[in-house]
Length: 371
Image 1: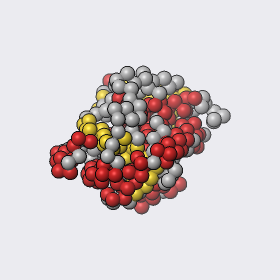
Image 2 (image 1 turned 135 degrees about the vertical axis):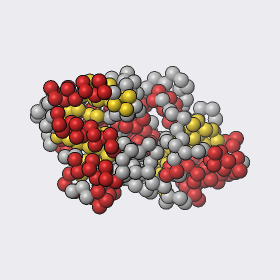
Image 3 (image 1 turned 180 degrees about the vertical axis):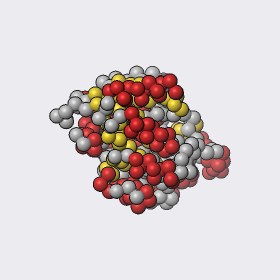
Image 4 (image 1 turned 90 degrees about the vertical axis):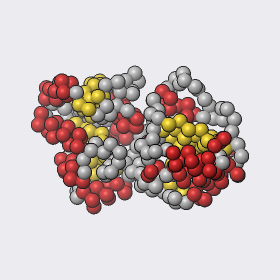
């Protein structure tokens, strides 16, 4: 804990999904460390009813600034003179750049930016190109990323000096595992079978087609295996449905397409035997952090920062991206061996509590703040 009580403003405009979950965890841990924390986020933000020990201000409407509320927010910044303004960003760099410049105008705070997506250009919904990203990174006093390869990308692609880049892990989502799920409180194995869970936004880089094809092989080895696909599509899902039908595995595949409210997340993870991330590209993944919070083993590809999160053979298994045979073998191995699966689940829970623990992450974040 810092000897001086800091005034910290965390800005997370979306109020949804992994970004607000991360912001909630960080705000809570910083508040627990004795600092004054204000979260500036969206109306009806997902964690609104979750106790965190910090104040919240609804400034945005799902990433769209509300003029009156935004003016009130910047008036608050000017009057309270925070020590740090910390922006959580992903796919809207133009918005983050405007917020950063405005914050600089009204207060003399240190500006920290966490790049949950280092280069979101071309992603659905992304607003702002390479030039905007370069200006965004140049304008921050410090930039946080979640994996070492991303720090290198910042330096090589955007010219960000190494001394202003900091690598901090994703935090755990233990608070999700404590939600009283009144919708359908499933436990592992509920409904019979062994469940393979794919969870999250569905887009080409997530490699879902590789998992669909691998699952045909998994089913032959583990006849009781079931594949549950849960998430909001950012692409046409027809090719996936057609492939499922072509492979004759429709009776063992359950799909739930659409936005997943926070209170529904626990049931999907509680009922899973293994969580699979067949990604072809990613910076890092909150899905792994969430799986660990529920003490679930993972099978992931070896892309981006995933190898830094997954202890191969301990908390899960790593396979080469795009290798459907290796993917099928790894998932089947976890499903077939109850002892292995339970041991990996225990290690996943340990990592959630230690390496991904918010107290440790808050301590490192305070160093970034200069505390």
